[in-house]
Amino acid sequence: MINAKEAAKWFIYRNPELSSGYIDENTKINKLLYFSNLMHYCVDHKVLFDEEFVAFPNGPVVFSVYRDYRYHGLNLLPQQSPRIEGIQGQILDIINFVYGDMSADQLVKESHTHSLWRNVRHLIPGNPQIDFSKVEPELAEYNRALYRTYAEMDFGVLVKEKICGNTYYYLKDSFVMTDNIVENLSQLGRYGEPRFLEYIDGELVIS
Image 1 (cartoon, one colour):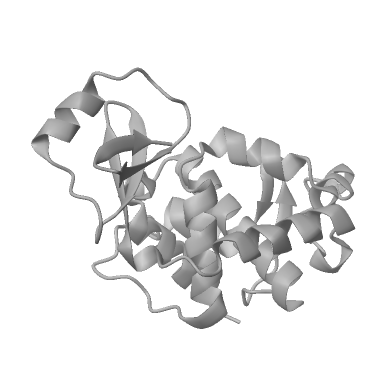
Image 2 (image 1 turned 135 degrees about the horizontal axis):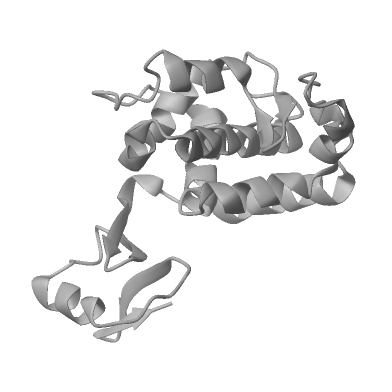
């Protein structure tokens, strides 16, 4: 198991906008932790973090992370990333890639579809615990499939760029973000979802 606050710092380091200290960012960090714990349980049959998740109206949270982010400076941007390796770091990378560009509201709505939260929401505000052993089979299989999809990806060469409200990803060892490309991308409308940039036969492809 790893420390939940260290994982929160890991996410903040990779997403500096999460250091704002706002309620929405607190909510988003806790959802990223929740999805990480969920995937780890589905893949490795063990919880990822050293603390329990409890049900809040906005979905599952680690109470100490919620408290320390709001009141005790956990929101501050770390000078360096906590070192998290192996399958634990791999899962954090996957969750950050899949869910990191979603808003707090989107992540809350997704967590509210899970029976892990729905089945205990009637006990709120009593801080009922989330029991990951009760994850529904369909959700467990979805998380295992998601893990298999990205397990071999080298996130160390994946670059994220935001241009005029759009988010783009590309591989730094095979793509160069030139001023000309930035200018061309700046003329495009809003996509709503991240896009991947690559060259195919010398042509820029946005997928």
